[in-house]
Image (cartoon, one colour):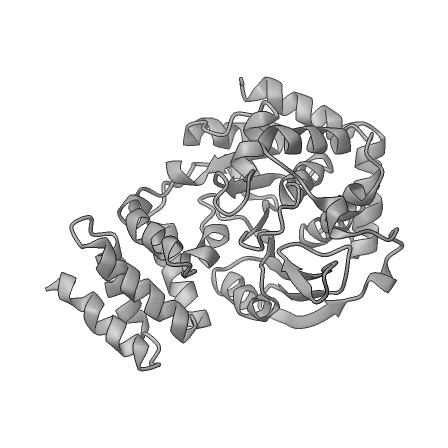
Length: 357
């Protein structure tokens, strides 16, 4: 019986043995069964996290759940272009403003189609959905309208709950794990499940040791190019934390690939970029209204401080991944031009009009 599979797999994981692909398939089928108790699912997810998810386990999970997602139908002309996503796993709990969302808008204003996949805040005060909604951009368009907006304006938001009905049955188990302070494989999966299936992706994670594994997962999922990053943030009280973005405050670990070759890991040093000194406090955000005001100030070219540097650096990487910049520095110059010549502000206004908010 399928429901008896999960306890057996949980025991296997507790013994430190990874799941075979066929076992991952059985696990997913069981997790999306609404009749199975949340406690049983939570125990499995906890055991998997405590063992440490392998590249193969994450990639099979992601592939199966992507296949179950509602997939927007894109025009053939758009499918022939590079489509990019810029997102982070969240979970760094540093309460920065919405860097990835700002970067996504800047990359789109530079002429790259951006399919932004995300949700409301879970570990912060303002997620990508929250800040876009506060900016006046519709986040809940039906799949056909979101696809049309992406084709016409080069940017659309794909609100995760509208595309992943299977997640409804897993929600109570995820909530239970969160109450226990336990992360799960779903902390990784969100950025991997974009229903548009972008061809290139800049993804941030909150632990440097995850960069290589998740870049290899993106590669296995068939992306043309991907980059996974984790930045270092010195703390005023000593020590350091990690940011699911490229950091303007310290070094950044990254892993990237181009098609099936060229996979490598690296460490970005701030000395490679001409950035003004900054602190974590300079990048702090607030609730959705506060962050929307910060984002709009950046897109209008009014904010020229440390937040702008963070956007330029990450947008530079986004444009490199998209194939329109030769390097991060080249991408930064392109992003700077987008902010200074009004294209970023014009993109925001066009999306407000076109999305019908």
